[in-house]
Length: 282
Image 1 (cartoon, rainbow, N blue to C red):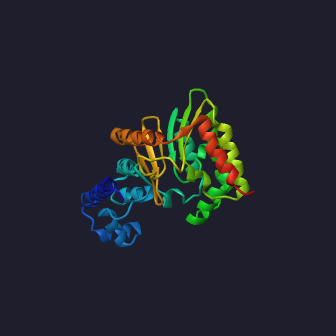
Image 2 (image 1 turned 60 degrees about the vertical axis):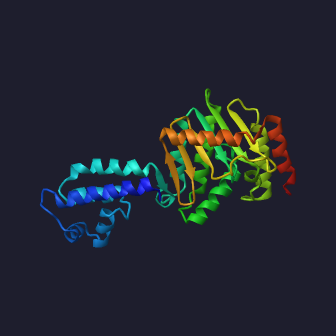
């Protein structure tokens, strides 16, 4: 968990404690507040000490219990402020994969230029439905989320409409191992390579492949997205990081540009994809 995130959570906890001890009903002990809320006293303690992230419902109940319902808006704003930086998969996948895909559709829809690095799998903007289905099904099984794979696939495919809108530009780099990853049956992977061969040369797609034999100036690292010059998202196993400060965005753009120096484009990229395609035993 990042230092900034934890600091913000501790500050929210201090604010909750302040409301408890300075409310219009007079000072409440943690035990008294827990009784009003019907919570274990330990939950009140964890929230006030920044050791647990509250939900919207927790904050609304707290504001009501201390006699200050109007303060809920402020508390929710504080929560949104630091949740925008670390978005826990445990929480955001609780309702299934589809809501996350729809959030991404909105993010991409607001953007005109994307710079993306993928080191593990084929980028979602260029996936076939069958490839996406296998990948999302594996995620659902691993994370034990509600099974809404077909709706999630439809949402991901809808996002690709962005590629056919004027004035849009997808600049995507993929490491060759991302093309070779056996995350689906061979026939699905082969069709996915055919799809990639077909997008080379699209006006809205600038596709670069970093070959296995290429010299790398930086280690591949995790995949990331840069949306215009306003947001970077980085995915890890536990969460997505949403980073919106100018210095960090500039850093990730330098990473992308540096990785691009090792990539091949156009006909050379097609040759790498075709090489992968020929290696697949269908």
